[in-house]
Length: 123
Image 1 (tube, rainbow, N blue to C red):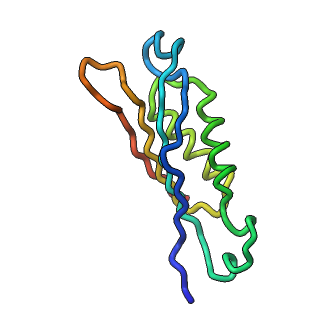
Image 2 (cartoon, rainbow, N blue to C red; image 1 turned 30 degrees about the vertical axis):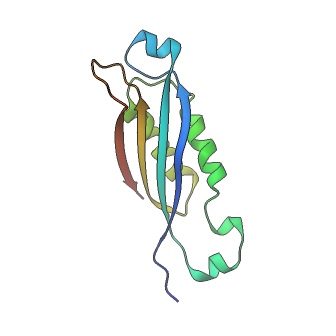
């Protein structure tokens, strides 16, 4: 059997962070939502072995994302880029990663649920 690359997703991860352009955002903080898709190299034999070392541990991916939120940034683009860079460095099985990072209730003069960035990176 020939497998296409597998995709692991983590959806609706919620974080609070001191990110933004305004002093208030960096003091009070904002709410963020992360959705991430990781395309991993795979084959039937590695999955049949039922061993975590043959895949990507999504608990470790979560910790990687959480760590990125500890560093204050002005833009969501910077946070998303830092997350993708970290994932590609830490998880050699990941061949492509896509992130959607939303800032909930952004401080703009509109009734707006969120502002978001979607980024993709390949090895």
